[in-house]
Image (cartoon, rainbow, N blue to C red; front, side):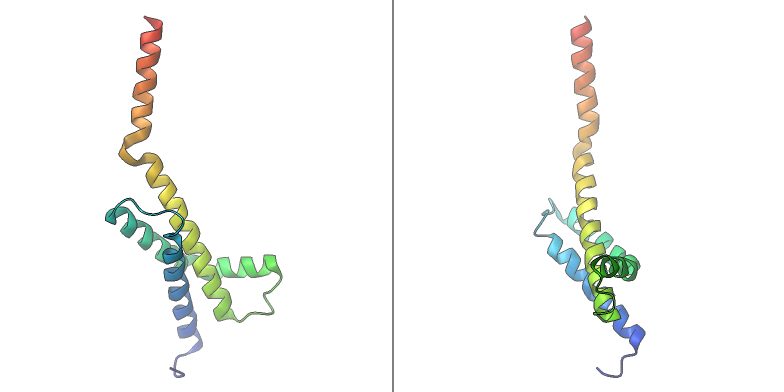
Length: 118
């Protein structure tokens, strides 16, 4: 295990943080089906891998702890946070548009307006 290079540890931290963030998110907003769970998990992991370093640096700077934690810890923290936020946001958007709720709401509104005007 000690033969892993520094970039290797950072990639492991990103992957671990991204997976942990997606797993923790299950407790907040449960998926309604396998398809939603798979999509949200995939987006969470990808966002954690892509934005993990940047988000970790921003969080550490805002908390004033960038000098106190290692780059690996900062990356893992950022990946988990990015994954957690992406999972929550995607779940919210998917539920908002699920079953064409917006379309049904507009149809109901048109019917009421048409009935009121007649």
